[in-house]
Figure 1 (spheres, one colour):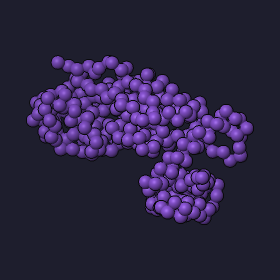
Figure 2 (spheres, one colour; figure 1 turned 180 degrees about the vertical axis):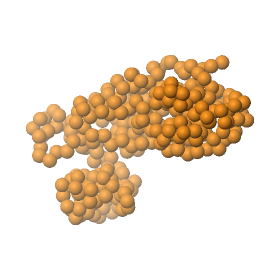
Figure 3 (tube, one colour; figure 1 turned 45 degrees about the vertical axis):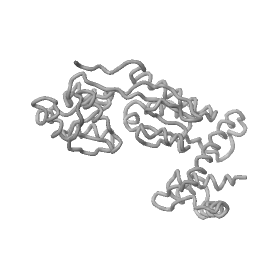
Figure 4 (spheres, helix red, strand yellow; figure 1 turned 30 degrees about the vertical axis):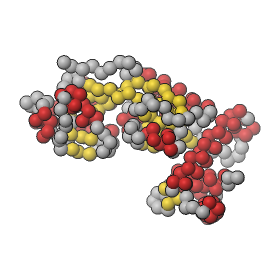
Length: 307
């Protein structure tokens, strides 16, 4: 039989990052939290938490945290059907852990999150990760739902097609004058600094290959922030692929210009979420779907390409 107070302590430590903050969240003393965790570790014969700043779970600890969060989600659904449970003193709002890619988080996803929170009173624990890696978090049980670029269903999950996020290759007018006065060619691209989000970001490489049929080999500035990525392009640091949603005001104002006008590329996005049965996940999925329909390019439509 699981010791659920101990599991709740482990989950709270990982969520809050420390024993002290976990104790405050649970309404107990740090000593009580430590005793619960120590007793569970002794019972299992395994370390569950790597102490640090912040504390992180061991592989076994991560599995137990995922189980504790699933139990909490199922209990919240049960409380919805049994109002007398919903009024239990000290009951905390349900938190749903999801994985979202940076470009979605900075562009179209916030209205979905806000609408869901307003409708349900639930809380979100958003994990930021590359869209090519979010599905793995879902497979491991680290999150209940994720925005992915892979339509292949994760076992035990439902998949919704959201549409495509359209990207535009752009830079500041001064940068274009300084680096592409002779046009966007293999030679000019080889010398013009390019912006990349992180080591998983291959959008710029794909765009060059699709647009010009060449491989990109250029100096790189690493900018691990979607908004910072855009701001650096406006400032003239380099060129890169930006979500059209957030780049358009800068394009309209002349602060950015397209490297090859009309040559855009689309990234299909999918929402995958656990079949756990919790109505909160269904309501979150509905909010995400509504927000996506209002902004993303519908499935089946393709980016406008010149030439």
